[in-house]
Amino acid sequence: MVISFLRILQKRRFKVIKILILSLLLINPVYSQKTDLTNIPQSRYEKLELFNRVLYLIETQYYRDINFEKLIEGALKGMMSTLDPHSAYLPAESFSKMEEETQGEFGGLGIEVTLKDGVIVVITPIDDTPAFRADIRPGDKIVEIEGESMVGITLNEAVKKMRGKPNSKIKIGILREGVEGVKRITLTREKIKVKPVKAELVDEKYAYIRLVQFQRNSAKYIASTLKRFKRKTKKKGGLKGIILDLRANPGGLLDEAVNVSSLFLRDGIVVSIEGRDKKFNEIKFVNKGGMKDIDTPMVVLIDGSSASASEIVAGALKDHKRAILMGSRSFGKGSVQTVAKIDKTRGMKLTIAQYMTPSGKKIQAIGVEPDVYLDQVKDDWSKLTRKSHYTREKDLRGHLTATIETKEEKALRLEEEKEIRAERIKRIEELKNKKDKKVDKALKRYDPNEDYQVIQAINYLKSLETFRKLKF
Image (cartoon, rainbow, N blue to C red; front, side):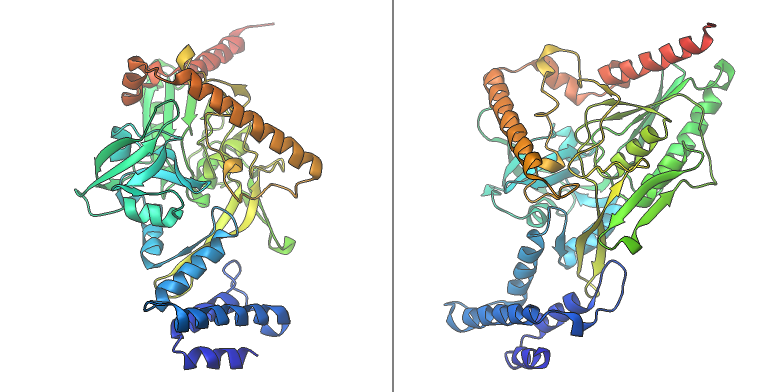
């Protein structure tokens, strides 16, 4: 059956199709094992024959000439989109750009986006980038690029349109909760060089460390920052507390999540990975060597845009009782993706497992719960509820659940989603035709000394210091 199928492909000059289909059949991108074709059910080949018939009809009856490579790539993208929001086929350009991003340097606007209900939604802008300076905010919906509607476009296609040569301009249209109509913004693309760590001393003895994303050497940046702060505060009694800010951190490299966690833990599990086949489950342990700070009191700040690697670190430090978590429930991306090469230039990103905190708690579509819930700011104008403020993993179409959902759980989820929609509608009505200039001003200039959540974290550290001094 396979031989006859391939002969048909060769006769119709479908060399590209043959290569890609063989790649998908013979490559296991997770463990690089060879697949035994004799064990593939007969129905698999019948479905491939159906695929071939559709191609033949398009070739012989579609009224315009066909670009077969483009057609096959479209089929692959469609196939991957049926899995979950994080699995994707990566054409040459997307594959190379993904490799660039893990190095911490790429060209574009500096914006993290996801796809929700066919609309491109902003997760977070990266600090000191065109998107950040243009006041693009989490939750904004990108509905236009250069006047073209983005509704229904794939995530990879949208990212491709936003990327471009440095100094080239791009006009995007966004919808924002509480703002009527489409807001159009012109940005100038830049070579994005992400600085993973921003830090400063607050009250001269508390280390505020903001990790923008988990890229290569993130843990080394944090370690060098802590060493510098310890030298600076040595004459004043040393550091009295550490605030690790993971708010709006979209994640990144798994190894860096382990490395960052290892800076603050003596030993034990950082994260466990549960694959489809239990014999391939994996446990990531704390690194024994390197710089460590396991004694300085610590607060970790998280929010609804803290995802993936951020949740691994937050979950590990919480379970080991090394830090107190403050903020709001995290994004809930607890799935693990692998990137496999199909050929020299193309690849695929595939969800292969989900991870759990050291105590065995799953994060996928659930998130990490803080020990102390805090609104982003204290003022009345910011009282967006914890449910409605952020787009989370569970809001994405086709997301994986942490476990197989029961009928009762599904009913509960649907009821919760109904409440969320009602809250959003209510909030939009409250904010219509209302604009606070102080809010806009505050969003453009960040100072940890004026950040309500940072202030509350310092208050906690100060109270902890006071209690330690008391004698009962």
